[in-house]
Length: 111
Image (cartoon, rainbow, N blue to C red; front, side, top):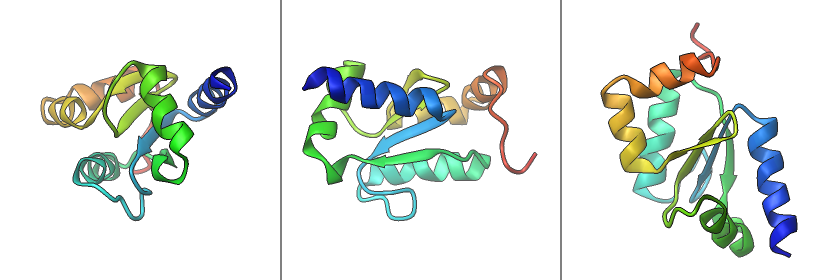
């Protein structure tokens, strides 16, 4: 079962430049940490696929096992796990997140 779920996760992160696994949705985040990351990506003008882990307990646990990271939200850019809320917030504040997006060829919608 785990392989099927991991394959689904791999497919999502490989087919979308930016994927955010969060509690809730981009339109209606259901925890403060998820909301903070959604706000950062929105301020940057980055479009992303949102995956609501609250809709599926299997995904909820599998994404933590997949990344070996215990918390949600989790941000993936071009198939690479970037981090959770604290890391994303710090990277955004010091300009590293924009640099990462530029380096990976992720363009913002404002550009």
